[in-house]
Image (cartoon, rainbow, N blue to C red; front, side):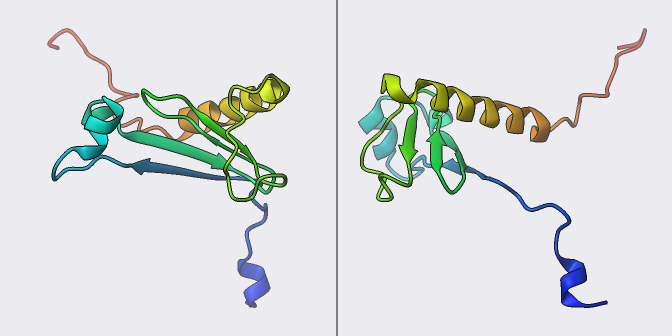
Length: 113
């Protein structure tokens, strides 16, 4: 078996990431954004063109990585990017639905509870 045989059969087109940004010591982040520690989560979907970042209780961010590689101009509210933002929001939602913990999904209750 060669190294080439170990390559994935399908190359990924995008990367997904989750991040918990709460401040467990002094809650400075929670105070700054006026959110709870349970709302200090963000997800990211990124490919070589765009990056979309929805937050639990804050406005989303969306960046054109070709025109703005430093991610300074949030395009989430820009009408010219509306279809792109919706496309990436759908990618994120589909990913979450596919990979959410389903530990109890096949559990059913019977007569005794």
